[in-house]
Image (cartoon, rainbow, N blue to C red; front, side, top):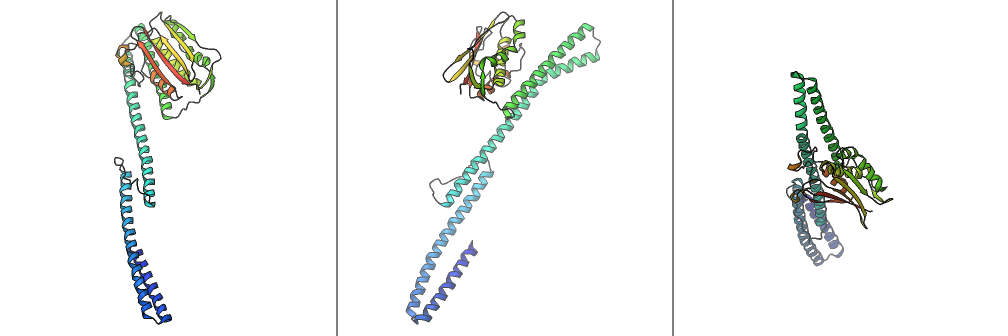
Length: 336
């Protein structure tokens, strides 16, 4: 920059000298040459002031630009900007700040995805530890100890139970991870609500009959809304499956559908053990289970999956419950 300024100075001096010489050659008037020289000096002084000011501003801008770039590379620092300035250099700075925010958002997204992945791997490790340990113990017992045919049958049944638990866990984890990562996207389209309910109910008929639980469904015929029928039926199946698990033999489950102005409300009500109020905010967390229900088969991912499916469609879920009297899970799906 300094070389450029010196080049401008030499050019102005050379041009002025030639012009003054030409003026003297034409007019032969020394005073005209002196006035021209005075004017040239004044112009050089003001030009020098301008160039000095410009160089100073440019230096300040480059220093600020370097600091901004350093701040952008350091994710813990935010670049400082002068929001009152209206200069071209300030506009460039504002663009750099926008770039910083984009980069910061990308960093936050990557950090969140990394934390979610670590949490997922930790959850998988924790959840698979017990069934794998049980399978190893049963296998070692069958290989190293003499057992009767009756004991062998019991061990094989226990092995089958543990394998079913692992299979259910893996399938649930695959569904959850695909939804969270965006591999699977929900496609909303007009579909009959009763057909979605039928798909969900078909999955719980066998365990429901085994426990002699009565099921009643109240759904208007021909009701159609825009929703992903497959995944919504998966969410409703999880609610119904939980209702069957936590309802004692001889109890009842009631499903009701109400067509509101902005939302479709689906209630799943059971006569089970109920959920304490202090636990109701935590039951939708991944792998969360109450201490009181550890005797019931489950891994604590069903309600988490329900919430993900419903919220991805723009809806939400609520729970009301009384200990010893049952629970009602209310799903709200937007009508449009």
